[in-house]
Image 1 (tube, rainbow, N blue to C red):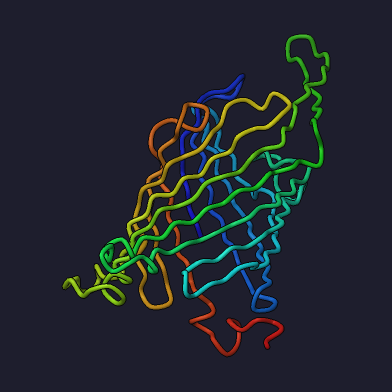
Image 2 (tube, one colour; image 1 turned 30 degrees about the vertical axis):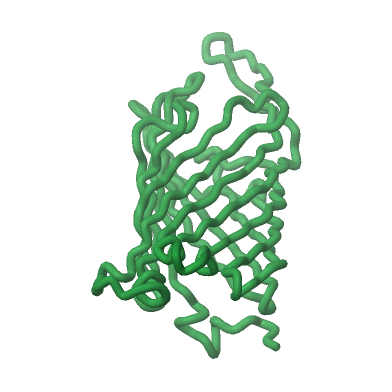
Length: 269
Protein backbone atom coordinates (compact mmCIF):
# COMPACT_ATOMS: atom_id res chain seq x y z
CA UNK A 1 0.00 0.00 0.00
CA UNK A 2 1.11 3.53 -0.90
CA UNK A 3 -0.36 6.86 0.25
CA UNK A 4 0.48 10.18 -1.42
CA UNK A 5 -0.96 13.65 -0.85
CA UNK A 6 -0.31 16.88 -2.78
CA UNK A 7 -2.06 20.23 -3.26
CA UNK A 8 -2.85 21.28 -6.83
CA UNK A 9 -3.33 24.78 -8.20
CA UNK A 10 -6.64 26.06 -9.55
CA UNK A 11 -7.19 25.31 -13.24
CA UNK A 12 -9.98 26.79 -15.34
CA UNK A 13 -13.19 26.56 -13.31
CA UNK A 14 -11.63 24.04 -10.91
CA UNK A 15 -10.46 25.55 -7.59
CA UNK A 16 -7.29 24.69 -5.71
CA UNK A 17 -7.59 21.17 -4.31
CA UNK A 18 -5.69 18.62 -2.24
CA UNK A 19 -5.56 15.20 -3.87
CA UNK A 20 -4.79 12.13 -1.77
CA UNK A 21 -4.28 8.76 -3.40
CA UNK A 22 -4.32 5.45 -1.52
CA UNK A 23 -3.23 2.61 -3.78
CA UNK A 24 -2.51 -1.08 -3.33
CA UNK A 25 -0.32 -2.98 -5.77
CA UNK A 26 0.19 -6.74 -5.93
CA UNK A 27 3.11 -8.10 -7.98
CA UNK A 28 3.64 -11.79 -8.73
CA UNK A 29 6.20 -13.74 -10.72
CA UNK A 30 4.91 -16.12 -13.40
CA UNK A 31 8.41 -17.49 -14.09
CA UNK A 32 11.77 -16.47 -12.65
CA UNK A 33 12.02 -13.67 -15.25
CA UNK A 34 8.39 -12.86 -16.13
CA UNK A 35 5.91 -11.25 -13.76
CA UNK A 36 2.68 -9.28 -13.62
CA UNK A 37 1.20 -6.66 -11.30
CA UNK A 38 -2.23 -5.21 -10.52
CA UNK A 39 -2.81 -1.80 -8.93
CA UNK A 40 -6.04 -0.25 -7.62
CA UNK A 41 -5.84 3.45 -6.58
CA UNK A 42 -8.49 5.11 -4.40
CA UNK A 43 -8.57 8.90 -4.72
CA UNK A 44 -9.83 11.63 -2.38
CA UNK A 45 -10.15 15.10 -3.97
CA UNK A 46 -10.76 17.94 -1.51
CA UNK A 47 -11.42 21.16 -3.54
CA UNK A 48 -11.32 24.49 -1.75
CA UNK A 49 -14.88 25.63 -1.01
CA UNK A 50 -16.51 22.59 -2.62
CA UNK A 51 -17.60 19.12 -1.44
CA UNK A 52 -15.01 16.37 -1.23
CA UNK A 53 -15.09 13.78 -4.04
CA UNK A 54 -13.95 10.18 -3.60
CA UNK A 55 -13.72 7.10 -5.78
CA UNK A 56 -11.43 4.59 -7.44
CA UNK A 57 -9.16 5.68 -10.27
CA UNK A 58 -8.65 3.34 -13.22
CA UNK A 59 -7.19 -0.08 -12.43
CA UNK A 60 -3.69 -0.66 -13.77
CA UNK A 61 -2.17 -3.98 -14.85
CA UNK A 62 1.35 -4.64 -16.14
CA UNK A 63 3.49 -7.42 -17.55
CA UNK A 64 7.26 -7.18 -16.93
CA UNK A 65 10.15 -9.29 -18.23
CA UNK A 66 13.66 -9.25 -16.78
CA UNK A 67 16.08 -9.01 -19.70
CA UNK A 68 19.34 -8.63 -17.77
CA UNK A 69 20.62 -9.76 -14.38
CA UNK A 70 24.27 -9.65 -13.32
CA UNK A 71 25.11 -10.46 -9.71
CA UNK A 72 28.79 -9.71 -10.38
CA UNK A 73 28.05 -6.15 -11.52
CA UNK A 74 24.91 -5.70 -9.36
CA UNK A 75 22.88 -4.84 -12.46
CA UNK A 76 19.34 -5.58 -13.55
CA UNK A 77 17.12 -4.41 -16.42
CA UNK A 78 13.50 -5.13 -17.32
CA UNK A 79 10.99 -4.31 -20.05
CA UNK A 80 7.33 -3.69 -19.18
CA UNK A 81 4.00 -3.09 -20.84
CA UNK A 82 1.46 -1.41 -18.54
CA UNK A 83 -2.25 -0.96 -19.23
CA UNK A 84 -4.31 1.68 -17.44
CA UNK A 85 -7.81 0.31 -18.04
CA UNK A 86 -10.07 3.12 -19.23
CA UNK A 87 -13.54 3.32 -17.70
CA UNK A 88 -12.68 1.07 -14.74
CA UNK A 89 -12.57 4.02 -12.33
CA UNK A 90 -15.04 6.64 -11.15
CA UNK A 91 -15.83 9.80 -13.12
CA UNK A 92 -16.23 11.60 -9.77
CA UNK A 93 -12.43 11.63 -9.45
CA UNK A 94 -11.88 12.26 -13.18
CA UNK A 95 -10.86 8.71 -14.06
CA UNK A 96 -10.30 8.65 -17.81
CA UNK A 97 -12.80 6.93 -20.10
CA UNK A 98 -9.99 5.83 -22.43
CA UNK A 99 -7.13 3.40 -21.77
CA UNK A 100 -3.43 4.22 -21.72
CA UNK A 101 -0.69 1.79 -22.78
CA UNK A 102 2.83 2.40 -21.46
CA UNK A 103 5.80 0.44 -22.81
CA UNK A 104 8.78 1.11 -20.55
CA UNK A 105 12.25 -0.03 -19.56
CA UNK A 106 13.60 -0.17 -16.00
CA UNK A 107 17.16 -0.58 -14.78
CA UNK A 108 19.04 -0.80 -11.50
CA UNK A 109 22.77 -0.62 -10.79
CA UNK A 110 24.61 -1.07 -7.52
CA UNK A 111 28.16 0.25 -7.17
CA UNK A 112 29.50 -2.72 -5.21
CA UNK A 113 31.91 -3.56 -8.04
CA UNK A 114 33.89 -0.34 -7.52
CA UNK A 115 37.57 -0.69 -6.49
CA UNK A 116 38.37 -0.87 -2.78
CA UNK A 117 39.83 2.64 -2.70
CA UNK A 118 36.25 3.83 -3.35
CA UNK A 119 34.75 1.50 -0.75
CA UNK A 120 32.36 4.01 0.81
CA UNK A 121 30.63 4.53 -2.54
CA UNK A 122 29.87 0.82 -2.87
CA UNK A 123 26.53 1.11 -0.94
CA UNK A 124 25.25 3.56 -3.61
CA UNK A 125 22.63 2.29 -6.05
CA UNK A 126 20.81 4.03 -8.88
CA UNK A 127 17.60 3.04 -10.63
CA UNK A 128 15.89 4.45 -13.70
CA UNK A 129 12.67 4.37 -15.69
CA UNK A 130 11.94 5.46 -19.26
CA UNK A 131 8.60 4.91 -20.98
CA UNK A 132 5.95 6.46 -23.21
CA UNK A 133 2.32 6.64 -22.09
CA UNK A 134 0.13 6.30 -25.20
CA UNK A 135 -3.62 7.06 -24.83
CA UNK A 136 -6.04 5.02 -26.94
CA UNK A 137 -7.99 8.23 -27.70
CA UNK A 138 -6.24 11.31 -29.07
CA UNK A 139 -9.03 13.56 -27.75
CA UNK A 140 -11.96 13.40 -25.33
CA UNK A 141 -15.23 15.23 -26.04
CA UNK A 142 -17.54 16.20 -23.21
CA UNK A 143 -20.97 17.85 -23.36
CA UNK A 144 -21.06 21.02 -21.22
CA UNK A 145 -24.35 22.70 -20.23
CA UNK A 146 -24.31 26.50 -19.90
CA UNK A 147 -26.20 27.23 -16.65
CA UNK A 148 -27.17 30.72 -17.86
CA UNK A 149 -28.64 29.78 -21.24
CA UNK A 150 -29.31 26.07 -20.88
CA UNK A 151 -27.47 25.50 -24.14
CA UNK A 152 -25.04 22.66 -24.68
CA UNK A 153 -21.53 22.93 -26.07
CA UNK A 154 -18.91 20.27 -26.75
CA UNK A 155 -15.66 20.64 -24.81
CA UNK A 156 -12.71 18.87 -26.47
CA UNK A 157 -9.65 17.86 -24.45
CA UNK A 158 -6.59 16.67 -26.34
CA UNK A 159 -4.73 13.69 -24.86
CA UNK A 160 -1.01 13.80 -25.63
CA UNK A 161 1.50 10.99 -25.69
CA UNK A 162 3.66 11.46 -22.58
CA UNK A 163 7.29 10.60 -21.89
CA UNK A 164 7.45 9.05 -18.40
CA UNK A 165 10.93 9.22 -16.89
CA UNK A 166 12.66 9.21 -13.54
CA UNK A 167 14.86 7.30 -11.16
CA UNK A 168 16.37 7.09 -7.70
CA UNK A 169 19.70 7.49 -5.95
CA UNK A 170 20.06 5.40 -2.78
CA UNK A 171 22.65 4.68 -0.07
CA UNK A 172 22.15 1.45 1.86
CA UNK A 173 23.49 1.46 5.41
CA UNK A 174 22.75 -2.28 5.59
CA UNK A 175 25.02 -2.87 2.58
CA UNK A 176 27.68 -0.65 4.16
CA UNK A 177 27.63 -2.65 7.38
CA UNK A 178 27.44 -6.11 5.78
CA UNK A 179 29.52 -5.79 2.61
CA UNK A 180 31.92 -2.88 3.08
CA UNK A 181 32.85 -2.15 6.69
CA UNK A 182 31.21 -2.38 10.09
CA UNK A 183 31.22 1.26 11.16
CA UNK A 184 29.23 0.56 14.31
CA UNK A 185 25.74 1.51 13.15
CA UNK A 186 23.38 -0.64 15.19
CA UNK A 187 19.66 -1.35 14.94
CA UNK A 188 17.34 0.17 13.97
CA UNK A 189 19.52 2.59 12.00
CA UNK A 190 21.44 -0.14 10.15
CA UNK A 191 18.25 -0.88 8.20
CA UNK A 192 17.96 2.66 6.80
CA UNK A 193 18.46 3.65 3.17
CA UNK A 194 18.46 7.40 2.42
CA UNK A 195 16.90 7.93 -1.02
CA UNK A 196 16.10 10.68 -3.48
CA UNK A 197 13.47 9.81 -6.09
CA UNK A 198 12.79 11.73 -9.31
CA UNK A 199 9.46 11.28 -11.15
CA UNK A 200 8.67 13.32 -14.30
CA UNK A 201 6.14 13.42 -17.14
CA UNK A 202 6.83 15.31 -20.39
CA UNK A 203 4.01 15.69 -22.97
CA UNK A 204 5.28 14.94 -26.47
CA UNK A 205 2.51 16.28 -28.72
CA UNK A 206 -1.04 17.71 -29.00
CA UNK A 207 -0.22 20.79 -26.96
CA UNK A 208 0.30 18.83 -23.77
CA UNK A 209 2.06 21.63 -21.93
CA UNK A 210 5.14 21.70 -19.72
CA UNK A 211 6.99 18.91 -17.96
CA UNK A 212 5.58 18.10 -14.52
CA UNK A 213 7.06 16.04 -11.72
CA UNK A 214 8.37 15.85 -8.20
CA UNK A 215 11.71 15.37 -6.44
CA UNK A 216 11.22 13.13 -3.41
CA UNK A 217 13.91 12.96 -0.70
CA UNK A 218 13.24 10.46 2.04
CA UNK A 219 14.14 7.29 3.91
CA UNK A 220 13.50 3.58 3.43
CA UNK A 221 13.63 1.34 6.50
CA UNK A 222 13.94 -2.40 5.99
CA UNK A 223 12.85 -4.66 8.85
CA UNK A 224 13.17 -8.31 7.90
CA UNK A 225 10.76 -8.91 5.01
CA UNK A 226 9.02 -5.53 5.30
CA UNK A 227 10.15 -2.15 4.02
CA UNK A 228 8.71 1.17 5.21
CA UNK A 229 9.18 4.30 3.13
CA UNK A 230 8.54 7.98 3.82
CA UNK A 231 9.34 10.74 1.32
CA UNK A 232 8.62 14.43 0.85
CA UNK A 233 7.15 15.32 -2.55
CA UNK A 234 8.62 18.58 -3.85
CA UNK A 235 6.87 19.81 -7.03
CA UNK A 236 9.17 21.09 -9.78
CA UNK A 237 6.63 23.75 -10.84
CA UNK A 238 3.14 25.10 -10.12
CA UNK A 239 1.68 22.89 -12.84
CA UNK A 240 2.66 19.90 -10.69
CA UNK A 241 1.49 21.09 -7.29
CA UNK A 242 1.61 23.70 -4.55
CA UNK A 243 3.85 23.26 -1.54
CA UNK A 244 5.47 20.05 -0.38
CA UNK A 245 3.44 16.86 -0.32
CA UNK A 246 4.09 13.50 1.32
CA UNK A 247 4.40 9.91 0.12
CA UNK A 248 4.40 6.85 2.41
CA UNK A 249 4.61 3.16 1.57
CA UNK A 250 4.61 -0.26 3.23
CA UNK A 251 6.22 -2.95 1.05
CA UNK A 252 5.85 -6.64 1.91
CA UNK A 253 8.37 -8.96 0.22
CA UNK A 254 6.19 -12.01 -0.45
CA UNK A 255 9.17 -13.97 -1.84
CA UNK A 256 10.73 -13.82 1.63
CA UNK A 257 7.56 -14.07 3.70
CA UNK A 258 6.16 -17.11 1.84
CA UNK A 259 9.13 -18.67 -0.01
CA UNK A 260 7.49 -22.07 -0.56
CA UNK A 261 3.94 -20.92 -1.41
CA UNK A 262 2.81 -17.44 -2.47
CA UNK A 263 6.37 -16.24 -3.03
CA UNK A 264 7.20 -18.95 -5.57
CA UNK A 265 6.83 -18.32 -9.31
CA UNK A 266 3.68 -19.86 -10.78
CA UNK A 267 5.94 -21.85 -13.15
CA UNK A 268 9.06 -22.77 -11.17
CA UNK A 269 12.19 -24.22 -12.69
